[in-house]
Image 1 (cartoon, helix red, strand yellow):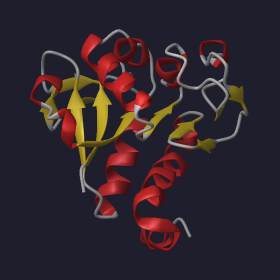
Image 2 (cartoon, rainbow, N blue to C red):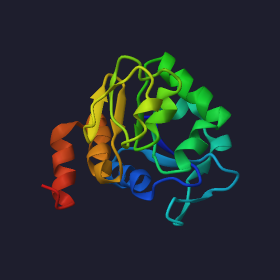
Image 3 (spheres, rainbow, N blue to C red):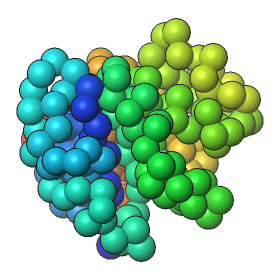
Length: 182
């Protein structure tokens, strides 16, 4: 299986980035963190430094299974302004490949018209960036190839929704049980 990539930019929401990494690794799903900054060390919204697995420039695009965009500010706007990531996201959208974003980060998908006609959720107040989306306000929304999450409190459900796509509900329940969530 190809690798799920969680993209990190300065100002990312730590719980929204690291919860999917943790859950996916527990589930045995290949996942890597990718810095879009000039350094592998990326500083979260709450000043938590995280060392990414690789830099964007080191990424082999044909090995990416799914794009995961954590929210946080200015993390989401930093992701939105990265030219290389924007091209990769557009390529994924055109091929209907898996995309996911949580909190403020659905704005990256929304501003590119990727959420048009799809159910989506985001951090309250960011709905205006989700052009053409049906904003539900749910903790997690799955519509076709896209998974969106509402915010930090939805990070675990968001991570489990991503994992379920690859390992199924029964295995996700095992992972959740091991984490004392079930």
